[in-house]
Length: 461
Image 1 (cartoon, rainbow, N blue to C red):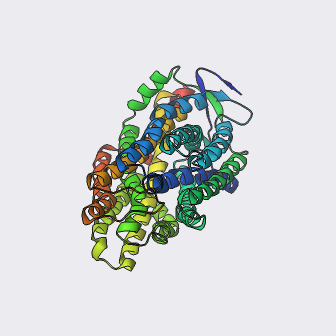
Image 2: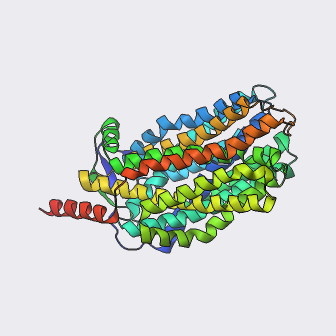
Image 3: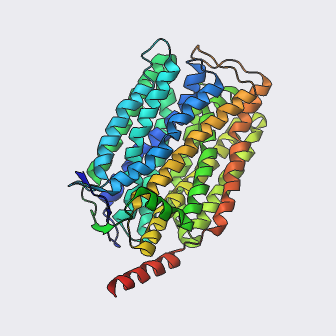
């Protein structure tokens, strides 16, 4: 494997990809789903209610390692863009990054020291986030290189989001049960770390093997420096608008994810089964409506479908503020609506990303998917890290009391109000207002097809 300074890989495949490639690529979402879900769900309560870390400090410890990825992800994209190997440009990083991540994830919750555990968790999380960057960035870059078909990219990403939903369900719903079965506290979290690490290993091997026969592409020149590539990405208006919107929405989604355990403890008063039921209600309906979202996208376009899903998510989140006076069954139904909306956001957001990359290639004649996806994943990771940080600051502002017993401390009415608002109204407003940015997004299938056709004609001439 070597890196060359001014080239990157592309493929030209307008036909439908084999099911093996669809399935193999999608199974990589076991990795992204597990790492994207479990730290956001359990790391904050682990710090505040098991290690006794103050809420504000826990927010810093959760946010800082993933904020580091804002710097690492574009570099990972640049490196994978320049890589040549018999396994292709992206797949070596999937294997090495994924297996390294599995080991480091288990280490996050190992708690081997009697003191300084907060600092240990932060360091282990920082290393895990770095390994994840070298898996996630090449992984997200692959759809733009596997096919040039506008509709085939939607099908490919539909498979991926379906598996992502399963990964979120399995990791998010079962991980709290593993903690409980392992004896709660530090022992339970150790077993949970090993369980999730196993999911990451399965996803890593599956995506590496499943994409072994995927198109490997040809070679085109790219911008010679990372700074030049970042400048090109910033001039891609559809990409810029989509990225900013997606990052802001990631903040709101991550706030809800971070609040699940707190919401179950202090609003539903169901600390043992509440998180699992919430996740089942969130993800289960999403799996059923994936074909429906595909039809909606085909009918109204990806951008409009994305906006529709986002507004549905925002409305459901705000409505949940009534949870203290609603029957449990209605609360879980609203959470199911959130899951349906989240599935649509993910499908269309991720399907529009490779369209933006293809549009850039048509305009510039250069393929630099790694840099675009590096920026994308850096922004998304930053948003997913910032969300729990903001949620924990809300808890701190409302007087949340931490605990080192392995169980949440009793909270007063003010603290419970903070738990509720940070889980409902605030993320709902964040997700809904971000949609305003999409008013300027104009990359339709017709516009993309025209740009590609003009680029091909210019190449022939």
